[in-house]
Length: 97
Picture 1 (cartoon, rainbow, N blue to C red):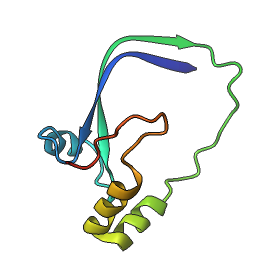
Picture 2 (tube, rainbow, N blue to C red; picture 1 turned 180 degrees about the horizontal axis):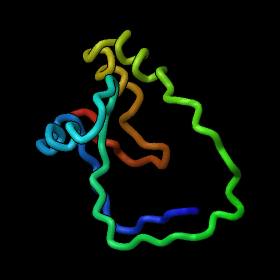
Picture 3 (cartoon, one colour; picture 1 turned 90 degrees about the vertical axis):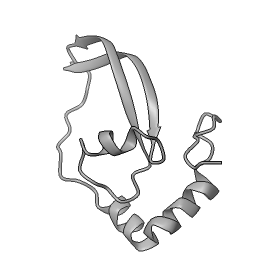
Picture 4 (spheres, rainbow, N blue to C red; picture 1 turned 135 degrees about the horizontal axis):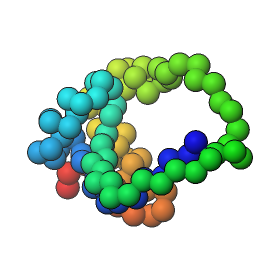
């Protein structure tokens, strides 16, 4: 089955006041840079007949290992150098200015 959620979302960065509360709702991940706060107004489902079958094999450890090796300061430098603009050319506001 396919689930489509419609509504509004806002990005919550680590420096935002809502981060502390929202981050407690998820396992702590070094290198986590933002959360999406979703206000879902409508959910639709469809059959998913054309969606291929996949098997969950486990979580990837790459981000955790990378972030632990870099440390908090190194991660922030990386964000500043490499994550200021999204793939569609919009500012991410990932670091404070």
